[in-house]
Length: 359
Ligand SMILES: *Cc1c(COP(=O)(O)O)cnc(C)c1O
Image (cartoon, rainbow, N blue to C red; front, side, top):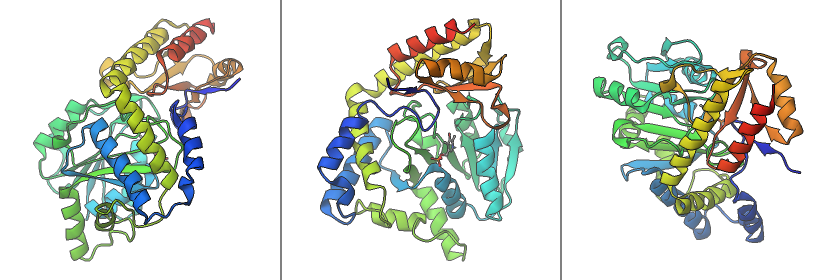
C-alpha cells in the first residue's frame, strides 16, 4: 500500500501527475531543446494557465527559477539598493531577512513570536525602505498573514515595493495584484509537483527598479537578473536550460486545476481546514498551535502535541499516513499537516478519524 503524504512540502503529488509524467516520457519531453518551438508552446501553456488560475493580470510577468529560495536572493539583488523591511514570525520569513543581510544590504526586521503574525503598524516603516517582505503563510508554524494587512501596508507606503512569499499557500489565496508588486512560490507544495521549479510573478515597477540599480552600478545577478529573465520570457524561453519536465507538468496540472475550478478548490480547502481545526480543538493530545483564528493558515495546519510528536507521527505512519514533524526547535512539539488541492475531502476525513483514534 502506498503512503499518503500530508507533509507541507514536498507533499503528495497532485493526483494526475503520474499519468502526465508517463505521457511526458512517452513524448520524450526531457530530451527536447529548450530553444525549440515545442518547448515555447509548453512554456506558453504553463504561463497562460497560471494567469487564468491565479487571475494574474497582464501587467505582471511570469518567470521561472530553480526554487523559491532563489527568488528571495533575486528579489534582494534586483529590487533593493540598501534597505528592505521584513515581517518575521518564523524560520522562512527569517531566512528571507538573513539573505538580505548576506547580500550586504541593511534590512530592517519587525518580529513577533512564532505562531502569530505581526499586526503591521505601517508608521514603523521608514520612508527609506525600498521593499517590504511578507511571508503570507509561515510554513514553520502555520500562521498566515491576512491579505488585508498586506494591502493596508501598501496603502500607507505606496512608494515601496511589496513582495509576498506565497510558497505554501498558492493556489488557494485570491490575491489582489494591484496591491502587490511581486508574488512567488515553488511547485512542490500547493501545486503537488516534484520540486525544482520556482515561479516568480513581478510587475514593471520591479523591473524598472532592477534597471535603475544596474545603471547605478549595482550587481543584479547574471543569467537570472530580471532584465535577462524577461528578455527570454518574451520569447517563451529561459536564459538557461530550465526544468523542462517541471514546466511541462506545471502546464498539465494547472489545466487540471482549471477544469476543476479555482472556486471549487478554495471551497474544498476551507472545508478541509475547518474539519482539521475542529478535530484539533476537541483532541486530548493535540491543539492548534496558532490560537488566534484570524491567523490560522488554511493550507498548513500545525498542532501542538502533549506527547513527543514522533509518537503521533509513527502511529499515523503505520496506517500509511505521513504528516510533517515540527520545524526546527518545535521538532518534537508539533505536527504539521498540509491541506493542499491534491488532498481530497475523503482523505482529510480519514485523517481526522485516525487523529481521533490516537488517545
Ligand atoms: C518551502 C518554502 C520556501 C522555500 O522553497 P524552496 O522551493 O525550498 O526554495 C520559502 N518560503 C516558504 C514559506 C516555504 O514554505
